[in-house]
Length: 402
Image: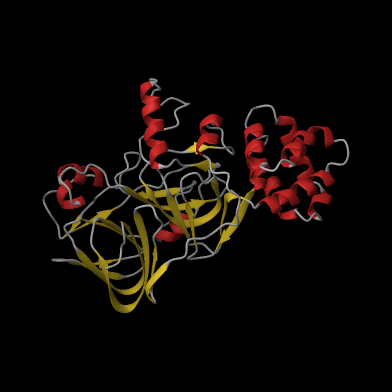
């Protein structure tokens, strides 16, 4: 049995006007469409309009299906949630700087807020559940731009020197506290702490003004100053625009994957990608947002390691199959089909068609799926195969290939 999945895109303001529509092959909705979710997450559980083959045991959402038949769908009668969440993400403007906790940090942080009586919907609530939220994103659009982790110390030092050169004038007094911190051996942590402390508004304004000036375009750090200018247009006065200058900016090409483990500060800037994560709401923000920033907790869980960005290379069991499997308990597989059927592992898994038609075959059913269609593969399907001509994505716990 396969269960068809549908959903309504999340209309966050940063969403693209046509990215999700273009991926799924349907008309654009007329407003921002940021994320299309597939899973049981209570924030937007997938709807389940039909099954293949048809069954009388219908339920309105995948969450309802799991509640009714956890053993059949997830492989355990005690299971209550699909532990992964698959998304089509389409960004038109930058998302917030954010970091996610480790399993231990999430469990401890959640227990602490519960013990202190912090309301689940409180503005200052940081931990919504006791789970980590590692995630990967694979670029689908020609360019997917992101900030990820802190730049190597030598690059930060170059930026500091270039900023000092630009500020040799009236702006120097406002920028001087930042330059002093940048001159320390472990510059990144004290800079982030100071910028988020609430007393750096004058410095942020001065850096933005310098970054937008003509001399900045001729600087060795011109690309960094351009990032500051770009982000300031969307988040004027936000200290995150200066924190971003200390971060790696990457451009993913189609098929390239970025992995955001626990502790890594990151932000997606623009583009369309397929995102897979543990189904958690634990996000601690570090700027570029009007939402709550818990500076103390952010600094506690943030990794201040400084290094060149490292992309997650896929494993290729065959020439037309790529498996992105971070050390996080899930895997995202993309299969390019050219007629020959490809055997995949079984459920629980989510299969999403980027290009079709494709033929999905299980133990007792075979169904033709078109572009933009998605199905849930229950645990009772121990092995499936997919054929036809097109491209499919398979999100699963563990390794998704057979």
